[in-house]
Length: 499
View 1 (spheres, helix red, strand yellow):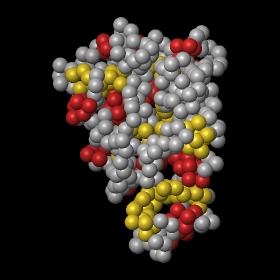
View 2 (cartoon, rainbow, N blue to C red; view 1 turned 30 degrees about the vertical axis):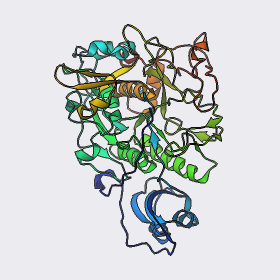
View 3 (cartoon, rainbow, N blue to C red; view 1 turned 90 degrees about the vertical axis):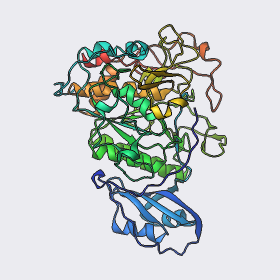
View 4 (cartoon, one colour; view 1 turned 180 degrees about the horizontal axis):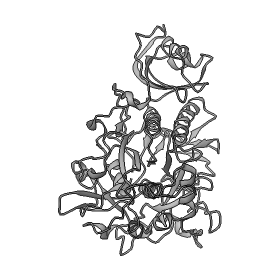
């Protein structure tokens, strides 16, 4: 599914985010105003932001929306047509890029110390709609829940379109103190700001942490806490300044896991040989690195282009918010966040256990595979429409084509995509952390080592009608049973992960 995009700029900033906001006096630049105010990511060569750096922004004709001194990034705003060139001419600036059209498309139908944390109690899978959760059965979540449903001492940040904190299956686990909206590039902690107005975030949040409370479904980690980190707006767009803000928030608020069911663009592939795209890539990579160094496990969807990310040749999707044009690309170009080093990349499969027809893949980028649904090749008795059921806002349920309303009135929707696969892996990562595994590296190793190996399919002709969306290439699986481009180290196994 493609989402129409719009841009929202916010002015509030939570001081607790560890981010400083400065709104200086009128810019001193003599550059002509373009008449259109835009946000810019300004990347400095150092890892800090000095007063001289701030002056360079204002002198070039900009005002500072937010600064991230931990990673040497400033989000600026300017209506000067010459701002980018002016600020980029400063010797301390490594790059600058307008983010006016930079967004993230949601593409779905769219070991260390192992002492369990306090409160790691078992959970049951007997909620009213549990019988529809083929995905949880497939990853052995009910058996894992007999050991642990996770600990409320583990906090998962769902970087998405916010979440519906009034949903009865999510409300028991929502962490209001650490939820935030980053739309516009600055942090706003008011619940109204991070309420989900798209639906996607509520769906991913339910897969991670829907409570075992007799209502609806049960998430992978039904006892953990979940924070909504809203980086995508109502149209499903995640602008770079929001992505940077989201990871800085997750790191400074000591979240243990983040789920990322999106890709950062307008360029599906951000090419480092392009000055503007390199500035975006570097700023986002620095923010992700910062979060991981603070102990955050970063889990991300692989994408729904049926593309081999290890061998990209063409991008016909970008810029996806305006008029896409075909461009030739190479391995100098990468998808953010799934191809950022250290990020756990998740491909999708269906109820028959093989890679979903739409899922992107690739040696080096795919770590594990998880249920994302497959409405074409993998409809079964357990999954009659092939898709994954999860929570959805009642206010948006009319927009869901395949909906379920619980007897209590709680609302749920069937969707498919790697967006649905990634939160399964994030949930298992939260269970692993609930068992006392602390570092991101150790969690990643535990997730990989507990996965059930799946070899390449013996006959890839099943994918013959589904070539890569952008370059038309046939889908090709490379590797053996222990690791391959379709399934990574294998399908996540919640029971093995906590045993």
